Length: 232
Image 1 (cartoon, rainbow, N blue to C red):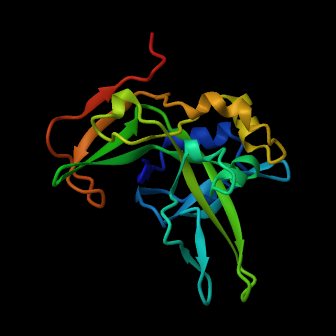
Image 2: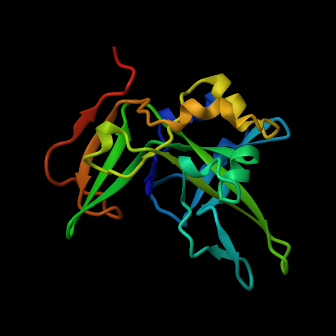
């Protein structure tokens, strides 16, 4: 489960936005500690252009008097095995509303008995792209449109099992064909994404235990390097 995002304003994120041909790069929401229900930036394709849009990191929202609030149902992640389940929260979005989430790193939490352990993962000399879903919500009273999003999670990756044993985030290959197909709102041939619904580390990662997510101070052993799955 990907429960924290680290989005640094550095050369790697900037280069990734350039490579993706994002039109409004200046609107990127940066932050060292982004948590569920926070606003984050997603990448959508709108009228043939790739643009950043602010979205609430919680796919299911409920109508409040003047706006929206996160649903009581946890939905900052969407599990891979629910994407093809009719009537699930991600079924229609997986076919019609796919987006990208850019990040420098992510955080994982693991409970072992009464103890809770927090680890941060930073992509080495790169920025990464998560596969995401979004929804637009129209408020019946104010006419406000609010966008929400989630990050797709895959089965646990063997190298991440010591840090989070339940799931791993969907990290997309940085390939133009993949991005084109993923962001194309007219493309509902989701079977082409079957290979993406498997755990994969597409970057080298530095992993560090931290004291708590909001402070992210290193503790314990020194940082460890986890190589990507494609190193020779």
